[in-house]
Length: 217
Image 1 (cartoon, rainbow, N blue to C red):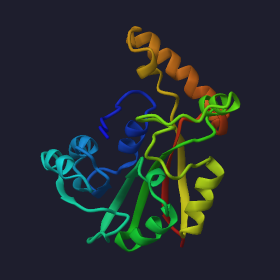
Image 2: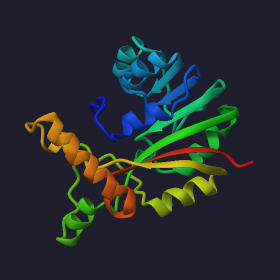
Image 3: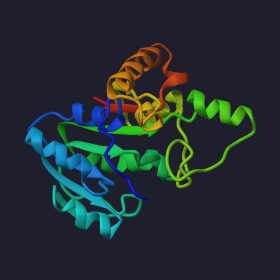
């Protein structure tokens, strides 16, 4: 699957980048072509990236220390201030197990950033209401998803794995991709309005959840 950077307003990638503290040691799990690392370099971070795809790793080496690793089968070596799980837990059978496994790789004040789709987003609800659960190449109904999260089940997973949520952010339906031909000023205005609605009713309007978690004290 071809994952690319979504740097636009209120996207998961922009929120992940904002949550990473400058000058920290970062591990990007399922780093793909290293698109996040290219921005984290600008924050003075030292980045390691892992992915199970050899072709991705060759691209990622331009921006970080990248090597092949399948997080569902292998252990990470090393200690990190920040570990990123961007759009990865929904692709795994045992997300709680993965979160437990990487606890040992966090420094004393280290934390994990997770982004994952909201299966009960209004778009998904309307599709299911009309009897449609058609898989797609990407998005909420990505055909490679094997685990689906609501805000409640994400919180339960994090808690059961031994973490506390320090911060929860929400992304909006990607209007920048839906209305590509509209002027940027109009798209950003729509995004601002939609984000305001999303923060009021995130369980319905959040497209993705982006959470910062740390080990229970």
